[in-house]
Image 1 (spheres, protein in one colour):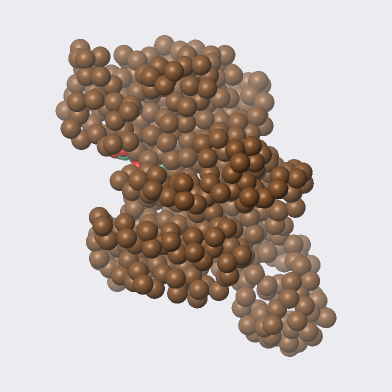
Image 2: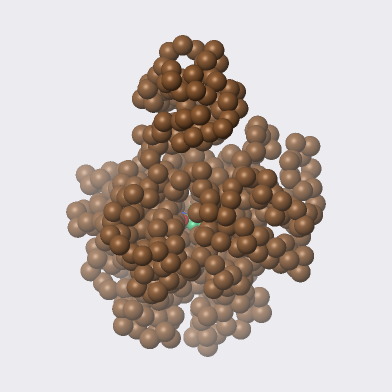
Length: 553
Ligand SMILES: NC(=O)C1=CN([C@@H]2O[C@H](COP(=O)(O)OP(=O)(O)OC[C@H]3O[C@@H](n4cnc5c(N)ncnc54)[C@H](O)[C@@H]3O)[C@@H](O)[C@H]2O)C=CC1
Ligand SMILES: CC(=O)C(=O)O
Ligand SMILES: [Mg+2]
């Protein structure tokens, strides 16, 4: 690596800064003599100190703040420490603590990271990217969020967009070795409907209600055009958009550039991987499952779509597959004569005649009644409704099936539909559980249950790496399927209590395996612009490592 910078500006560049690890020769060449204490340290020594400082932070939010500051000083060291303590630190950098950091963004704000685009300045979009300083061939990946539906915590304005894009990108690098110097986090600031932000004197975003309609669409359009023009090779990842925009935006741009929506497609694919594992344990093929999706929003319907397509591959026709899925939302079981169905929910609405004799409360046909009538084998939670999988509902489900598959995957912790220890207790250890948040192993009746983390973080880094290695023109359904099957193929679910997905410690191997499968699929579908060659080697070679390169002047 070389730099034309000298002196303090070298130390201020987190992608080049090595701090006390600059050698004497580098210090001489880069004008650093006298700007650092005399010891020349190894990265191991620096990482040991950083870890001790991290451990000394009194709570998770301050641990997050500490790691953000480390990333702002020295990216290699940040990723080294994160990689060395992945299981411990992923929940701090990412889900669930990232939710706390997002809520506190304007109060903890110290320095910017990435690109902030405001709906009030559409004309300035290209300039903003130019000011960021990367050229046409310098960007592999852009992660963008308008923060309308951050995890399960709702609208968090500019801090939500910036915080989630940065958090997702940290996982991309830690998990799949995406080069942190070749990515751009983007906060799309269209205002916020969050009154606590609008009335917070520290709030650093656009201080007006969320803009919707034609102006919003023009803003998104200008953003996508700028990306396509300025960074023609880059992949675009959409994160945490609201349900009225997520699918619409994806549809609009899916054929124009390599792009995907993580909440719909990444989540759908990781849940499919876990479901395939659960089918093996339960010894019941997917096409015979009865699946209730609780929370039919962006993620819930994304999951339903992936499961439907997998059932079709498993031998059902489209109609039969759809009929094996029951979707429940705020208004209860979705029924085709409901006036307030969203367009993307309509496919899963049951014919009203089918449910005419079912019990209805003020909020429609509730989850309890659905479980009683449907006798589901799988219950998937993407509702943000904490505690919605009650003991009564879970016991009722477990009475009808030997191995109830129950995935409360809403994030963060205070949105989860049920805690895994309760699910195991209420089902006498029979439940096959996966959650969105990380959960410690649970001992029930002498068996240790490793709870799979069905979080898109296990999938999207490898998907992105595979697409980047292939220089994919598009992200196809086939590439998502290949990713899901690759993750599913990496676990042995045969032992009692075994997790349904690979463990977080294996994230690098998982991501590399996913990337090979995705890049191979892209090539097979004629979507790869790069020659396939030896994909295993190409994926390994493409993975950035947190080690200091020599820096010359
Ligand atoms: N584990 C993972 O990888 C992922 C988990 N999620 C989680 O899924 C949840 C939903 O996220 P999105 O789909 O993006 O949000 P969304 O807002 O698009 O969907 C939530 C849906 O749940 C419904 N809902 C809310 N309260 C309900 C209740 N009491 N009963 C029934 N339905 C109810 C809403 O009407 C909406 O349709 C969040 O907690 C999010 O963190 C989302 C993406 C990935
Ligand atoms: C994990 C994730 O993408 C979400 O909860 O929104
Ligand atoms: Mg998300």
